[in-house]
Length: 115
Image 1: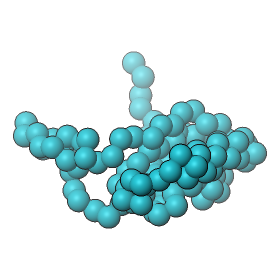
Image 2 (image 1 turned 180 degrees about the horizontal axis):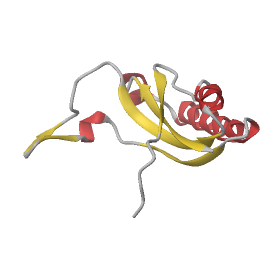
Image 3 (image 1 turned 135 degrees about the vertical axis):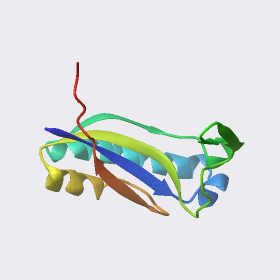
């Protein structure tokens, strides 16, 4: 089994005024996704939502600045680390990942030598 990172890109603005009920629907969608990973023979190794881009600090060399590295309509809002038998299985799993106002990006995790 290989590891894959699913990066969730979504618009931040629509979520700013979400009610508790709307957030409940978002969390339920992610719980469904987590359950579906196993249905595809994969394994969910981890995942988290991250704070909005307004909390970001970006670095270029030794220079730090408040805010995201670039300003775009979509931002990285979270990630999942999964294990899957192959790239095709990982693609099938990634397509299930909720991103209501955006999309997801799938990348294989690069193996690194130990020692």
